[in-house]
Length: 327
Image (cartoon, rainbow, N blue to C red; front, side):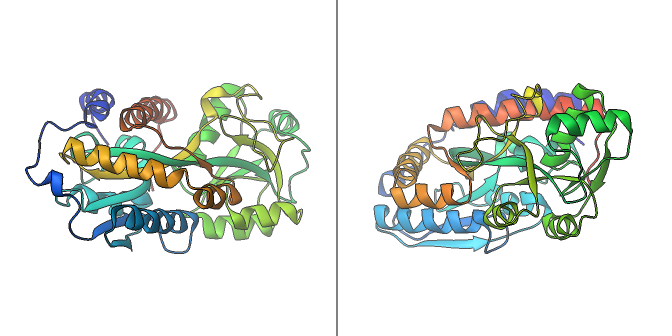
C-alpha cells in the first residue's frame, strides 16, 4: 500500500503528468510506423470492442497500421504496466479504466508510478455502475432495500466483482452514509458473480453496464434498483442515480480512457488527443458505446488528468475509512 506521502504527491502529480517537458526531434514525422494499442482487459468484452473500433478509425485518420493487443490481468495493472514500460514515442498507447491509477495504488500498490510513468491522453467513455436485485431480493426499490437492511442487519447479501473493486467501494460508501449493515460477498471477477446472481445465490449485486447484463434485466432475471452515473440512463429512465437517492459520494462510474507512457512528447499527446476526439465523434463509435449503455466522453488531456486525480483522492479517503484490502 502506498504511504501517506506518496498519496499526497499522486493527486498533484497526475495533473502535471499530462504535459511532459521533453520534446522529441522526430515528433514532427509521427507517425511513420505502426501504432500499438494495449487493451488491459480480455478480448470480446466492451473494452476490447471499443478499443478495436477506435484503432480502425485511428488507422484511417493517420494512414498508418494500428495493432490491438490484449494484456489482461490484475484489474488492468498488467496492461498499464506494459504501457508504462514502453518507449515514450507515441507508438504504444493503452486502453484501460482509471482504476489502476486511481484505486489500486491505494491498496497494494502498482509496479509503476501512476504519476511519473503514465500520461493521460483522452477519456473515452464511462461505464455506469448498476445496483441490481436478484430474484432472491424482496425489496421493490433501493429505499426498501435500505429499510430491510436496517430491520434485519446483515441479512442482505451484496455481491461485487472482488474486494476493493469499484463495486465494493460503492457498497462501503452506502454502508457508511446510510448507517446500514449489509453483508459483502466478494467474487474474483464478474463471470461467476453474474452466474450466481442468476441462480439467486444472494440478493444484490453491483456491476458495470454491458450487453449481457442488459439482456438479463430485459428478461426480468435482474431488477435495477439504482445506477451510479451523472444522470439517469436512457435505457432505464425510471431508475434513480445514487446521487438522487442521497448518496452522492457513492455515485461513481468506471471511467475509461487512452493513455501513453510517461514523458511522451507534448505534441504527440496533443495529436493523439485530437485524432481520438475526432474518432469518438463518429456516429458508429457513438452508437457502439450507447448500445452497451456506456456513455461517450472525449475532451482535453488536462481535464482527464484532473478527473483521475479527483477520483484518486476520493478513493484514498474511502480505502482508509473502510480499511479496505485487495485480494
